[in-house]
Length: 100
Image (cartoon, rainbow, N blue to C red):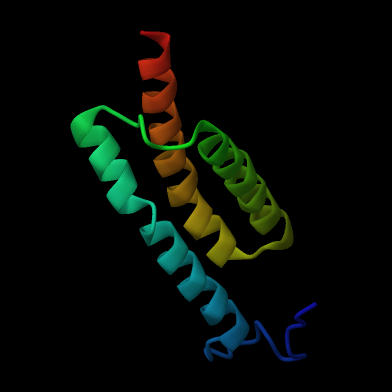
């Protein structure tokens, strides 16, 4: 597991490269959901989106959010505070259409 240097948090303003990699990964993977969420919102259709995929993404990303909060990884928290609602939107449209 990644460990902070002994002087971390004592006025040192250097960026932790491991946290930076995590933040960048979060931005990129979160961005991957934006086109699908926008298309789903505009068309009000998620017909071609697999229900199992979306359910697993909502649950999995919710757990990543909780894990990030518990261990203090704000890169994980930030990424998943955006990803979970995007996936939930797609799931909501998918379930709403199935109920009709």
